[in-house]
Image (tube, rainbow, N blue to C red):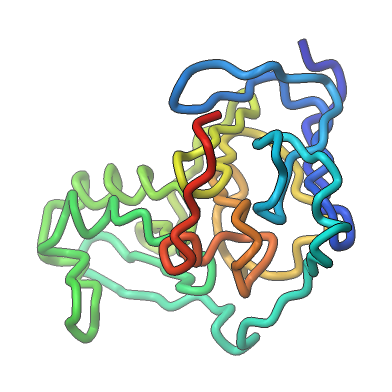
Length: 210
C-alpha cells in the first residue's frame, strides 16, 4: 500500500522512479507494486516492467529530440464543444478515430470536426484518450478531469498509462495536456520523452508478457 504522495520522476538517462503509486497492472493482472520502485524506460530491461540497469549498458539517453514547435495546443471550436489537441503527446492508441471517426478523421484536414457528433459523445470519447492529448471545453471552460487514486497500467507492447492524481516531475513538454491522463514511453524510442509519441509501433516493441 502506497503511503507517499504519488510521484513519477524520470531519472536522467535512467528509469522512472515511482513513489507512492500503489496500483500497477498489466494485461495479465496486478503486478507487485512497491511504495518506491524503478520502472524501465529504455526498453531493454530483462525484468520488464522493472529496471535492471540495462539503460547503462546500452547508453540510453532520455533527451528530447522532437521539434519543440510541435508542443502546442490546437483548438477546434465547435458550435457546442471545443476540442483541444496537442499532437506532440499523442500516443496513437487510436481510441478517438476508432470510436468517433466522424469527428476524428484520418487523413483529412482539419482532422477534427467538433460539430460532427453530439457534444456528449465527443466528451465521452475525448475522456478515453489515454495520453491526455485531447481535452474539451464548453463556453471557454474546460471540462473537469476525473481525479482519483494514481494507477499505472503497463500497456501490451506500448507505454505506461498513468491515471489519477500523480505528479510528473521535470516534464517540460505537454502544453495543455491533462494531468490525470498520461502515456509515458517505455520502449526507449520516443522523441518526446518522457511522453509516448507512438514510436513503439515503428520499432515493433514486443517485450515478453509481464
